Length: 458
Image 1: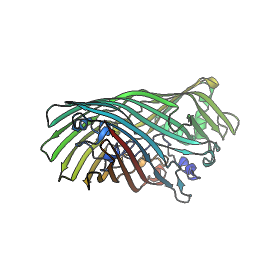
Image 2: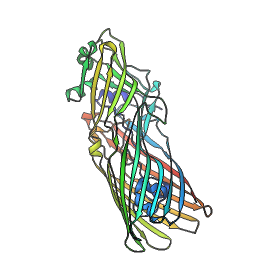
Image 3: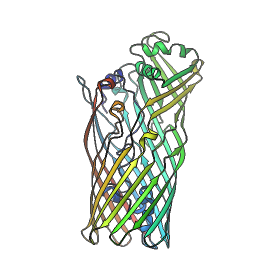
């Protein structure tokens, strides 16, 4: 994993490294379940299996009466990120593979459909070895990881043969790791903008000079080193509402609302902040002061989502589906807010906000499913979206900048009770360039993702 010296130049230019993971539609998946992702993520108005509880829970009511199914799936996200700056070597991100299991059981019993499922809602991260981190405080690793998952309990009801309504309640958990360097100049910029305050013992008296000292840096560290859990963690809940309406035998419409998550603050005991005092602002030049304490990530949430869609059975073999989703990033991604408290060296209480200022995102999904035989169904689709991250705040370590996704998928019926479905997503490279005042760097980001699922019916 090579970050090279470009990271030091980006730090010096004033780029704030934020521990926010990226997925594909911002931090959200491009779709849930390979049936939907094979069709561009379109999923609001047709039966797409247990993953419907993560897409539109009302689609569970479209199952055949008496049907019970178990879906077990795994997916992989494979981003390719390259950061560029004039006169510096390219920085190739080493975070190239992230894996997410999922599964759900659903039963249709008369007018009711119900079940339970576990799905990754989103999140990703990047790791860099100690050898890749150069400059003040070299020899320290750089790591960032965010994960948000759900246990979903849905209930769908057939109001009539044509109308389904549904709701679901989700237990949501979040985890975060962070090993992050921040230059003294960056800290000074946050303080000047009213986004960082510090109180406490003698070390606070030297912070002003520390932030103005050439070569000074701070190193924030809370990480358990695991790819599956986070040092800082919390739990909470969210909910979904949905409906589908069959206009006629060929045309069905659907709509859903996903609430903003209600996660508690993520807390990590055993965290540390190291002040790398190269210029001697706090004490003897070249001294590193490490304070151990507690980090709190304040009010980190995933956004609310509104969705509407339709499915058209154009022929016995061909179905066309299209959705629109509005993702409310602006409400949850204005700032990344973190506090640190320690009793070491007379005490330190630091409150820091890193501006993000994401914008809301419009996502358009369109897909096709063609049944070539009773056993084989082929799928294709597109997921088209705007980039929610303003260029002035884009981060070369966490660029949630991709826009368009192109998908292929297939399903094969093995026998009367089992089938397999898979999907592949290609995300073409998008390049964004930060303004000169924000660093002047450019970032290339592309992806290749996949999902695979086995279904067993009872």
